[in-house]
Length: 301
Image 1 (cartoon, rainbow, N blue to C red):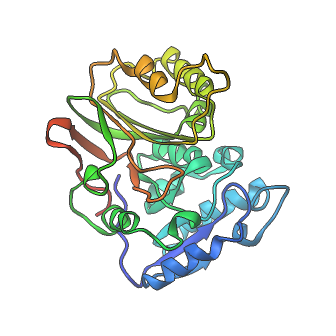
Image 2: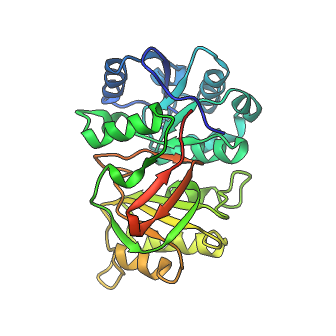
């Protein structure tokens, strides 16, 4: 299910589904207003409960109400951190399915994006938040325009050429994934990620290489690498070795994925990084590494 694209004059709801807003929140507000969008603020935008943007009920109600409100065209998260997993069981997925619209964020928001995509089939967006929209790089804006404001196909690999081809090949399927630790957090729940016949996207930040390996091994043991059609490895910012004998982050990738007979793209600028390439979760993608292509059929209509 593909949401309607944005156009100037549309209204975007801003929410804090995880941690409460930071001092940089106005970068997102300013950027979106400068693009010609109207802004409405959810209650969570100015709420605090412990480290969260309001209690679980407040944050869930923001999402439910904004999907139900026909005057709101899209929902953008202002910040990640932690907390979205606490209320995904409080969302009204029937309302969301009947009122499809753009919802975007990343990092901890992965849990929310995956839950909505898995329960409703709605394409959700691993998209930029406040930090990514300060003095926005052209790569970020070009990707924003294609992901949110175009009804045509586009090549994810056209925005930035710093990626590498880890394994050549061709494959197609719907994209799923996001932040690695949040993907793993869905395992064994009613919101568990489904990777069958799909292209898996992964990103992470500030994790020791052995911890990344452990999470990938957990996904492997859960059967999540079976019948994958491709892998897109986004930015793994500040990877570390806890011990000199540990594998490097690249060695972890090659050890876990090297025997898979599928195309693998490594180092796409998406995740905790500037510039930022938006990934439409649930959209169809056709990968052909020989042509340097990862074609998104359509992310909005």
